[in-house]
Length: 475
Ligand SMILES: [Mg+2]
Image 1 (cartoon, rainbow, N blue to C red):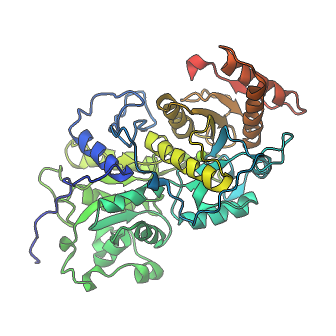
Image 2: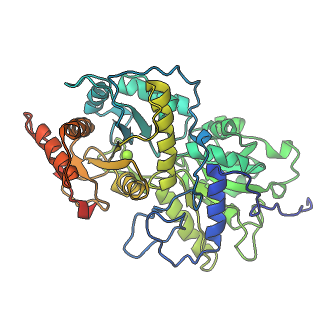
Image 3: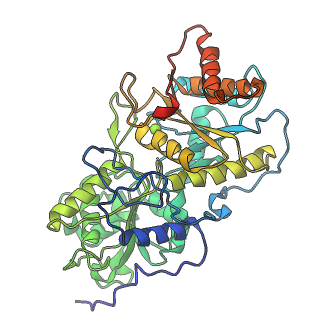
């Protein structure tokens, strides 16, 4: 049997700058010293997963950037395409913008939601005011290169979508490649895609559950790799490792939804219970496993089926519960990116600033209002409202649509500023609200008045959509 080398210093890393990843790491280290029973209010530094008895969302509204006053560096939201020449356009709205969730808002089951195509046209100038409105996309989904996902979206929405206006769940993980220079375990997605994405992010040594099963088929007794998967998986034992015990995982990244929950759960659990991430070992304390990151925390999502489907947040919850069962009550704290994390919205803010500057010549800094349109109260609305509570100078305005996870007639767990039927109504509503603002002189009730004017403008149309404005107190 191969000798076991010293455990890597996984929990002690030097922080050299204020990048998203390092701030996240600092927050993570800080939370390790936190009393996990404390419930931390929204807007405070990154908090651990603290499921309350009446909280079935498993969400963490805290900021990923912790106490870092200056915030992450601007390079974090750098588009992956070359910048285009800025050109000032007087017809572009300079004081507001839109940000969209994708699944259940614009796309469902791989097809565009009918109103979505028209909504995009309206943003691109086909509206009665002749204005064009900047917009970005912020989805918790993933499992592909951002460029590929943009290509899909371009086809679905009949517009050109640039990676410079797109963030998916695992995009911020790019920055963690600086923190983990050794072996990382990447879970989820089709075939080898997530390994390729992780490598493109800068992770140097990426292994997958398939690699582990290929080296030891007893790892997952009921999963047999297909010929294709076996051929594509790394042959770790041929690469110089004498056994899997020589492989030390520094961190686990669940990039996209698992395609085989049972074997992925088994392997995540093995690593979580290992001696410092060393495969096929068991810790005596169960307190030395490497960090586990999920690209988002949505328990359900809106797919082609008439009822919502289980998502990555469900696997995250299972991992934590099963760990507790298997270790005699030890707690496992995992970490999630994506919405509703405020850090993800801060990332989106910087992306939007860059997009406005590069695409529209708007380099005046902050935008007055960002209308965020989503279908999931627990991630889209919760995150937007938390961002709004924290953000100064920009009004993050949450709009809930009825084409996805949220069921019309039910009370949303997190209240939006307004609920509208479809994404097209959300775009009309935001534009009307902004046009009303331009006309409005001033007044203490300006916000309420703007909402009422916008609602009136939409309900004056034939086929009146049902719009519900929530009062400020309930937001
Ligand atoms: Mg959605």
